Image 1 (cartoon, rainbow, N blue to C red):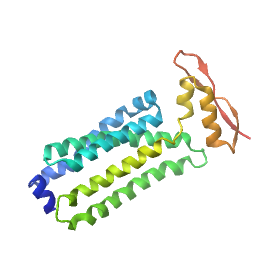
Image 2 (cartoon, rainbow, N blue to C red; image 1 turned 120 degrees about the vertical axis):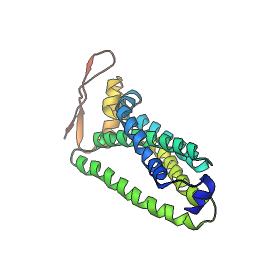
Image 3 (cartoon, helix red, strand yellow; image 1 turned 90 degrees about the horizontal axis):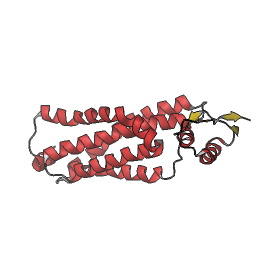
Image 4 (spheres, helix red, strand yellow; image 1 turned 45 degrees about the horizontal axis):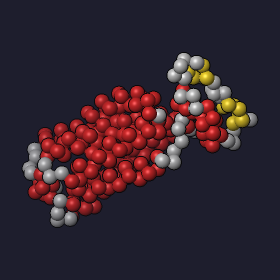
Length: 206
């Protein structure tokens, strides 16, 4: 894209390839730590943390004028994506009723592919703009999606097991009743809290 070249400078195909692929490097590394973050902060805030990092990376990408900063911003975005995608997969499987758990897990992959396809059209749409906005708009759009997701996470519940591990039994019961109120009547689960005492929580169908 000529608008990108005039803003950032000419880049060889090899350098562009490294730039495009570097997001996978940081994403793979952050995904290795995602379970620790999710257990420490909860699935909810583990996901939220990743999305906030994605927002930071995309804002930097949309506003930069130099290629090194653009690479750093893409690495930051990858850290957030690795964290958020890993945690949301666990989160969806944990809160889904077992009857549709497999469908929900595979829907995530389908939506990722749809998002990639949409990205091509979103990038092509502003390509006729005769300014740096031609390549900045896709980053702006990505940042706006992160803002929407951050706003939506405020309404998402914690997961039961994390609440039980922290001894928040009443909160876990309330979440369980709100998620599966039509099919569950009793509350009994098995987990360990911070002091090592055994706590039990289990939902059984009526």
